[in-house]
Length: 626
Image (tube, rainbow, N blue to C red):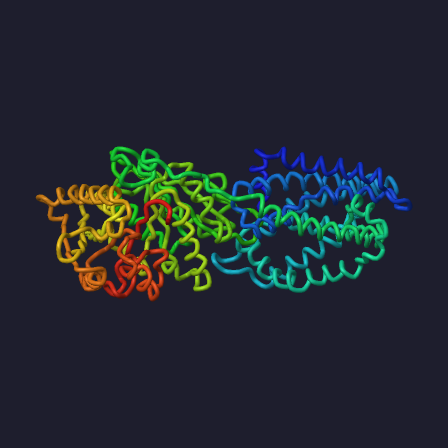
């Protein structure tokens, strides 16, 4: 479990953890003093700590159920609950110490607890790290290691009992010192999850149900006041069935009320609460990024399979002295083997620790650092690791994009990553959809199933094709193409498709069916202006080619794209969204697989219908998916 990163976050919100623990402790102590039943021993005071507990694991599970674990509120809740739980265990240890029957037992407890903690830090943890180092990259732990680790949990419980400590102290410390992340923590989680969730937890709840007897609760007014009890207290003969039944009732009421209440009261809103103005939007688009400023890019990867293609795409974006590039490389990793999601900057201090848990991460970042040292222009590489559930991986990245004024976010297409397996492909598909729906900048989905871009960038002539139908997304693709033109080995071909309405005037397809005439005219002017700028670069430049293709309707448009047989393109770029009629949107999307991610035209270019599906495609979307 990743305690360090959670405690770092707790520096900013430690007051929440302290206040929640102290307030619960004081209120429970007062109620216990006023309403304490006769006949209970003084050791029942230990239950005050139980009622004051805010378990990090329980809070994390609740946040995952509410889909809040990757939000800022979720991070605050996890960090503050960590502080609260540390205070709870410290208070519980003091209570156990004070309730020891003899001075010898108390001294044994005081010596045993720190000794066991030091043993875990300096003996058990190094042994775990040695197991991780001996495990080949990408391989699971040996069964022998798994069995030994499971036995270690049982042995730690026995040692705790032998050293006159509560039996649960040993396994808790044993789990805390275990390295988080793959391969150790993930393998242990996979091996134990089924037996714990399907066997042990049902038995645990059955055991609780057997000992619960609501008929023993005669004074219900007192039951509401006295609810802080634990199964451990029952087993230790500290409490009776009456009090234990009240505890179960309290847990049921708290669980049934708190979770629905949070769903009703908390409405998660994006950090941008209103549609940005034109001036604000200029900082979020490629076409409005000044030519003499830094080009901020975020590049996301799931593994090292597409690294060379992503580097080649970045190099094609033409870093120069006038417009250097700052690339934020984010390795997206599914949350497994830890409880808290993180977005961590990689530096010299934590690189070694990350190499143990995530060996592929260092290989990815080394490749990008090598590219930075050998690129044709100035490129700054900043590396990050984002560990979260698939349904929340996009949230931290989108917040990062906002904080750093990034204008271009590149994400890989789900079918690129064959080594991730078919089981993860639907999750990556949903992740890409979340990026498109949430990102406040231009998003490019990079389709390179055969990793051809990495092999083509070093050619004498790198050929880029731009399919321009019209609209803001296509203008982003064309703007990036204009930027690429500055490279000496770059050839750019613009294919502009014009639809002939009723055989009269040619109007760009992207402007069909617009309800607002002024918006339509403005869009047409922007399209014409950018196309004219590109056409101006064709003079005395053999590396710039312009073709205009006139079609009669939307069906002919798709047939024209399908009929292009030129296969020497090293990269094709197109916008995602085009307003090209209800026939296309409603009927043709029924038999296209990736319309939600790539759009109608992008899906066709990425399929085998266009050049047998061997040409890499970059699909652009400007701003959130409406």
